[in-house]
Each structure stands twice: as structure tokens, then as C-alpha cells.
Amino acid sequence: MTAAATSTVEAAYRRCEDITRSRAANFAYGIRLLPPAKRRALSAIYATARRIDDIGDGGLPPDEKLDRLAETRAALHRLPADGDGDPVLTALGHAAARMPIPLAAFDELIDGCAADVTGRRYATFDELVWYCRCVAGSIGRLSLGVFGTVEPARAAPLADALGVALQLTNILRDLVEDRADGRIYLPAEDLDRFGCTLERRGAGFADPPGRLSELVRFEAARAARWYDTGLRLLPLLDRRSAACTAAMAGIYRRLLARIASDPLAVTRSRVSLPGREKAWVAARALVGRSA
Image 1 (tube, rainbow, N blue to C red):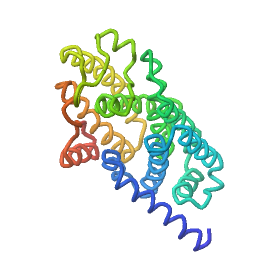
Image 2 (tube, rainbow, N blue to C red):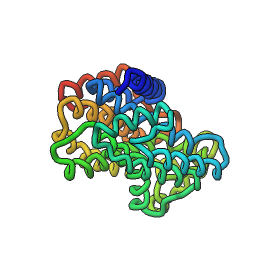
Image 3 (cartoon, helix red, strand yellow):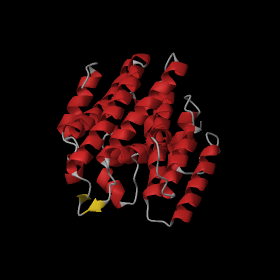
Image 4 (cartoon, rainbow, N blue to C red):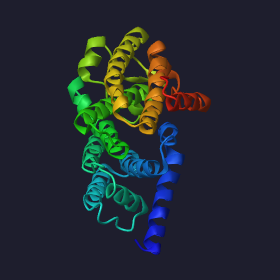
């Protein structure tokens, strides 16, 4: 690689790391624990995923969002050979040429984002799992390509399961915010089971608090079981990669525990952890202790 090409790639990675630091509130705590090459590659994955999410969550009309997603899909299909002069794609292409990153998983992320754009809702939990695998399980499998493992066939479904757990946690945390945007992710069968509609009333929901609490606890228990499965990935990773994964998962598990202990908290404010607590979780992960 020429000096100019090396400079371009280095600048591309710096751009991805800047995006990750500024936009990844929880993801960044785990990524700091990786060695430089893996940290840069994972930043490129995050920056690409962030771009896709921003298209889906942006203010363009739905048809234009779908067009932008299709253009992004086509650009990703040209990797790793052609980054189109785009720093994010340049960094991702460079990483994918050196690590077994399954770039096809971005197709699933785009499919999930397109489902958001078209306002898809989910009748059953199996349908919701499809969505979670698209938007978060895909990131787990992409990350696994960076981490590496001696048992990829065993590790991939566990990385996928951990992604499902993280996304279920996000869905519960963002229940009010998503509903304000016209999105309902919880399965219709579960809403019917607990007698809830998630119709809005003021800043919260019109559902009886007791029923809503039961619904949220039920979904939180489900998410906890996905964590139990997904965290069996850790012994299949090297120490630093396991620490990165454990830190990210640990932060979200603590969020889930808070939601389960006070289900109506999600209707009052956005449930989050203070920075010092996230740093504590990451430090424990680095020394191999559960959060």
C-alpha cells in the first residue's frame, strides 16, 4: 500500500472512531477494551450501522428512505474492493479484507430498517425475533468476524442470540419514544394477552398500570433468557474480545434489571445508567467478573 493510500485508510478509521465516540453511548464502553486493530474494525462496523439507522430514523419521506437504503445496500455489495471514496466504507472495506467479517449481515440490518420505514408491526414473538435478528443479531455476527473464534459454527448463533437480548432491552427502554414515532414492536399476541394497547395518554400510556407492568415484566423475563443463551459466547472468545462483549452486555443487562424491578419507569423517563456505573461494568468485564 502506498503512503497516500495508507494515509487515506488511517483517516477513514479515525472518522469511524470519531462517530463511535460521539454516537455510541453504551457500545463505546466495550469497544475501548479491544486492541487497536479490532477496535478500529469494530468502529467501522458501528459507523456503517449508525449510517443505516440514521436513514431509517431521519426526516426524509418513506420512499426516499427506502431509496437511500437501497443505495447503501448496493455500495456495501461492492466491498471490500470499492469504498467509493467514502471514509466509512473505505475503513469497513479495509477491515473486511483482513478479517472474516460477514458483510452480507448488513443486508439483514437494512431489511430491519426498511421494516421500520414501512411501519411493520409484529403479530407474534417469532416475528419480533426476526426483526431483532435483523437489526441487532446481525451486529453480533459482524462483531464476531472481528473478534474471531476457534468455533465459528457454535459461536455465530450465540452472537445472534445476544443481539436479540440487547434489542429486546432497547424495545422496552424506548417503549414511549417509539410509540410517539408511530412504532409498536411488542407482539400483538402479547398485548392481547395482557389487555394492553399502548395507546398514548399524555406522556405515557392509557393502559392500566398494573397490566402494563405485567406486560413489561413478561417481556423482560424473556429478554433475560436470551442473555442467558447469548452469554455462552464468552468462553469462545479471546480475553479482550470477551471483555468487550461482557461490558456491552453487562450494561444492557443492568438496564433490563432496572426495568424489570420498576416496569413503569419506562413511562416516566428514559432508563439509563450513569457513566461511572458503565465504567465499573467495563472494568469488571476486563478482569473477567460478571456485572
